[in-house]
Length: 115
Length: 109
Image (tube, rainbow over all chains, first blue to last red; front, side, top):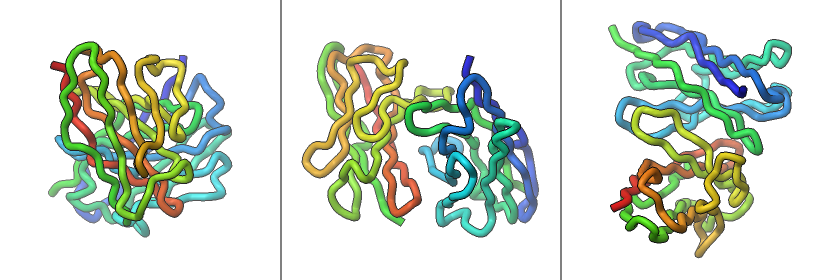
């Protein structure tokens, strides 16, 4: 069974940091580019970041550039998102998703930035 | 950053056909934008229906198809079912980044 399981979300104060993880199983994780996507309550999907299958290439949405860092550990089949200098507008459910012919999504982890 | 546009809402009759479109403010959408289509139902995670313009996943119902039409990416639903009522999002590639459209709320009525 294919699974993407996000973790690491929670309540954090403005200016704080969180590290999200996405544990993959049941498919060839190391063969696929991976994305982080977020969705604020009641709003649409927003692309956050992507990383190549081997971790050598990354890109970010302008809104998170310089604050968020995507990475992966293919030996552990895990994707990460390090989020620093968090703002209220970063409050959202964060999803990891695999791309191309895989196309899997996790169930998401909620990040709430509030004092 | 590029802006991706979708119809805010559409209605289709059960058994009917509807086409959702996905445009870009930078010009015509081509296969080089690697269009994706996603379906999201209330309270659920999104699900990928179409990748790279027209490719389906094993779980994609045969009644969904992806294409390029009139300078836009298109998702066509032929033979709508009540369970197809959902929000649909497209995603385009723009210079290394990716941009979602605002979503189309599809009502089957």
